[in-house]
Image 1 (tube, rainbow, N blue to C red):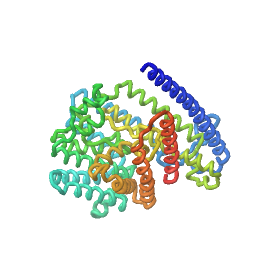
Image 2: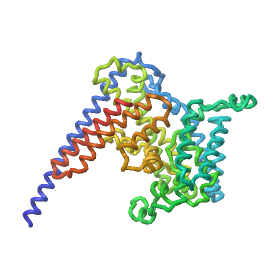
Image 3: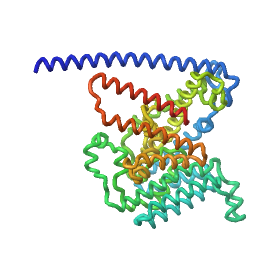
Image 4: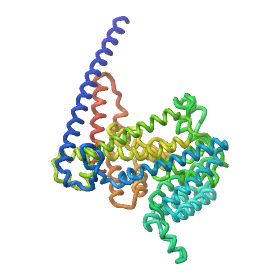
Length: 485
């Protein structure tokens, strides 16, 4: 027994030794890889500077032109000062009223409804009437059909109908209701309402299903979850408990519903939060993030913003894509630009979503983190989609994937879900082709993962082989994303 124990100890020490060697090699390889990528990117950016579109004077010294070719990032960056001022005032007002009058869900719903409607009036002007009208119709349908067998088809048909009509008719014109209303078309605000309304539709469906399930026997065992969940055992509240926990039926009121739909901090871009999670925190503000945690979260955001500024001033990946100059480059340079664009997109969305989530945290509502994992740390497509716009993934799983049958019909479900995702983004054939191409890439991955699950990894060599296969899977994932951006 003593000899056997000694041999096992030596074997384990040997495995740990080779793992350390492997780690050193991988770190050196990563340093060399990114040093080459950055050096070549800088060289390409300098060589083609005069040919790139949408470069504007920057602030770096010595003077460098800044890549503002991405309209979404350009608009967000330009409006950051006014957005920060507005949200600071909103947070101060809402938190002061909550503390002063000890407001709970109902009282806070009126506070946020008034604040958010003022915000929406600036964004959309008279078009707020369209939002409130469609939202009110959805509320009536949910209340009427929630306890019937027709609920799901009625809810989906209503919301998909307006999702499509809003796009086809470009947000409608007031003149279609009569010439006496045509003057309202002169007061349509600064931001197209039907673009933001895509997020409102997700919230309307969330409210509908959460109200529908509130009338059924709960399948979620709250006590058992608290005993097993590390977050909940520590005295905090995890998002799953907020989402799956029971909500009193009187909380499904019109004022709370409307406050949920137009909640200002996450109205424009998300993250997406379920109705149950929202109303639970409207009653009792989030306690997961202390003032220190939120300060650290804000500092991390500023650091990421600085990285983005360096990327757009020095590397200019997106300008290469917009200018179509990549067509004139070598295969290696095309790979570098494509890889750079993916990282630019990840960092852009990460900054936008975390910015709005930060203000929501300050206001007492914790929304899911949309980018919990870096794009370079995803070894397969499933991992990528779970960690890219993660709050949308949670919404899709809860309100589409599980009602459609879950993992029992996974191969069929992904086609339905990705088709909806494409239509939700916009009515374009290229988005539908992207969605269906992604589904095609999913099929071989599902087959390989199914086969891998039947195999058991044993020994140091088996673990090493598994890591190498995972790394190859990550490379294939990045390549697939570059093929269907």
